[in-house]
Amino acid sequence: MKKEKYNYFDEFIKLSEYIVKSAEVLKDVFKNFDVEKLEEKTKEVHKMENEADHIIHVMRNNLIKDFLPPIDRDDIALISHRLDDIEDSIDEILINLKIFNVTEIREDVDEITEILLQATDAVKDMFTNFKNFKKIDQIKEEIIDVNNLEEQGDRAYEKLMSNLYRTETNPVNLVKWTKIYEWLENAIDCCEQVSDSVEDVIVSNS
Image (cartoon, rainbow, N blue to C red; front, side, top):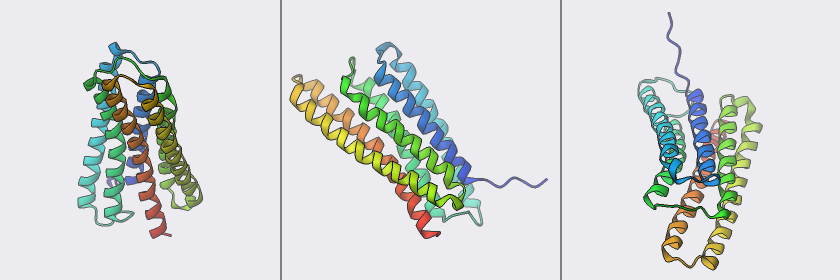
């Protein structure tokens, strides 16, 4: 019986699905914040991060042995690394909420967590279409969506930081939320970085 060929595109989709689920948990944590549930939610996302790491480990092992991968080896390695960056950044945000002993959530955080969730959704849609190079126009639309969401994230971040430094008088909270907003913006930036990598592949294979 012939062994089924390893499918990198399917594994990219699996990774993007973990990322969306993690972003959903993160948004729920911020929207319905409960200190008592933070440990549980952090473990939930960390488990997904570990499972995503395993997928990437298997992918790289296959890449070493694969005589003729469907796209350039360096591109596969870079895309998997970029996807890992998104998952890691979401995982780290939750870990740092615990480290910083955050007990209350600022109400204005909703917008940027929603942008992050939308960006991860767009990344997942992009990889769903990436499996079929004939859908280049659809892939390009998703790339544009991710780029637009990254710009929205930048504007939301600027607004959040401006509001924080106008309204927060507690210096400890000022430090905490400066870092939290930076981490959220970075997670959105990571989504754009993976879309840029996919765009480079599309251009080089057109």
